[in-house]
Length: 88
Length: 142
Image (cartoon, rainbow over all chains, first blue to last red; front, side, top):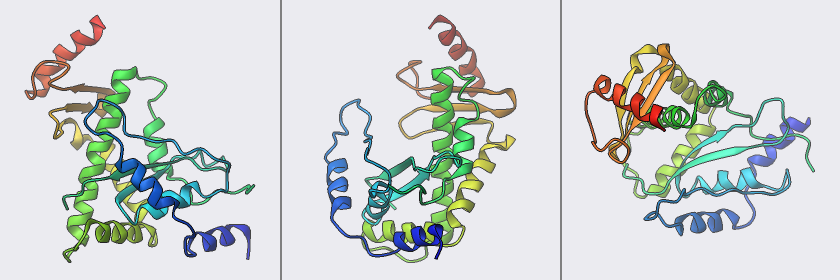
């Protein structure tokens, strides 16, 4: 199995941990009544599970994910639009 | 640490968002991105209307279904391609009225974008062309 296949395979395995629920609770706790931007930066070394965490959070809230990484780069920059109150 | 990143980048979205970044001022960039979001949400709603037949019991169920849908095949890339294609077409010239009263005018072939809201120009809606001169004037004063 090459590295790319291994990464894809790992991505599809069961998620370990509860970090996605913590992220979800923290985002939900943000004030929406004040004129502040409701965004959060997740900073950590590459390969530590930032993208996977927000991917798991997408099970909890309707999410439109963008990966804005430069294709020439080897590390991810993920931007997610999470719609916290879904009327659909 | 890993030398490779996963998942793959959404190149269409990145290319669109960065296309004019070096040429626009802050007002134009905000309007440009708001126009993008307006079309994005519209297209996502169309996708949901087209695909969702069942009633979901909770928004978690819908979120999980949507997540799985984007993961399948080329669904994610196809959706984003449809959004950037829509944004690149002349037919979206005109204006988008967003729920909070913001009006975004987008003229791709003139490379001109304007955004207005009740907070910036004192009125909520109006003819796009009528507001254009007003916004130009406001921007020149700024």
